[in-house]
Length: 139
Image (tube, rainbow, N blue to C red; front, side, top):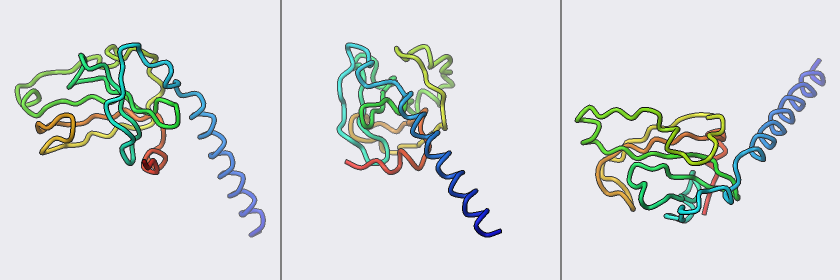
């Protein structure tokens, strides 16, 4: 019985790894980024490079790139704008390339901001890869 469970476990792991690799190869290539987009940060641990059209900042979209593939879209929304009750509808339409299936969304509070946008704001990341995959990214 134990051998059957081991075989099943290995099969499930291989199937999951194969599906993850297939999904990664289906992500848009960094070469498909819009023409006005420039790199705004080198590799950030757990995220990858950040690319954007400077005229779209601070809101975004910001495109996250790792190993030549786009792995997330990001929007930065400042606290004061949210406090005023501003709505953000159809953020998807601001992205100039096809929106891949979203694997998960991270909504992060930046109380002091960060390099590139130093006001209190929220970073909203639409990730196309599993959390553990992007968290493994290192410079």
